[in-house]
Length: 338
Image (cartoon, rainbow, N blue to C red; front, side, top):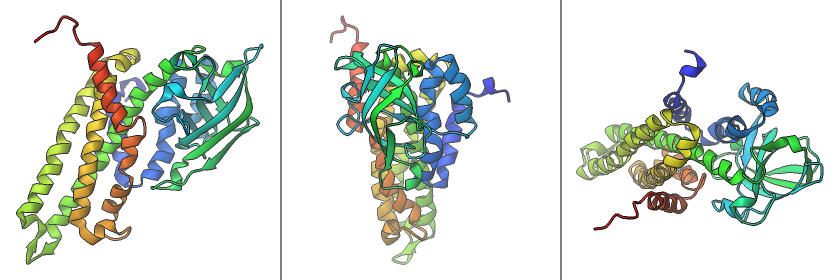
């Protein structure tokens, strides 16, 4: 196939198959930069960045990360405080802290949202920093899954950034961040959906072989009900994501962000809510093995330990639900009445 023949369904298959290795820290460490750090350069970066930086990232020679979240501003992007002071020659001096940055410990490049103007959405710009810049350092953050993800605290102290490292328009960064979030949330949906289906599959294998009280778990009515509840909850999400992916293939980047932001966010909310229920039931069905990091229940234990990442990263569940309804309210006909 030619590169132009690949679409979002191909990308989705890639994400879904990679996570089946059941090593979430590893998959985040090798993939998140490509999926959420590189797109702002691809969509909004100047020509030199697309010609010099992207080939290094896509070839695996260099790594990249997206640095948005801060200790006091996670999902609340409009209130980030990392300062990017613009100098008379157009360059920037950046000072501030970013937290929970996946791949930050491994990254050579950092796509960073900074405040270059007044508070709120209108005062944000996006800059490209690299590890060689003086005043930039990273510290690892221990998480529930693995240090392989390279989750980091990024500290920037008077980092001098050339004017040409501006991504997109000056003080128009919030729009770019929101557009990028749409694909990131779709990516998280792909990963969370595949991971949840995989653990249901593992659980089905288990109930078909495990015997208790003289018969297989699968021969117990209550167990079959638990399986039906899990499968019945996750399969509609599969078809919902199919619909979103199809629409992405038939919209340009801006239309995706404007028209699919609400449904993608609500889909993320639903998938992570289902994952919460699946984690509980699968652990119960595996019993002691479901809380043991080795043996036949190790995948269930790992899933129960890390499924919450998808419910927080890229926007928390509550923010996703609220965003979806607010987007619906914006499109609600003013003349509609009962």
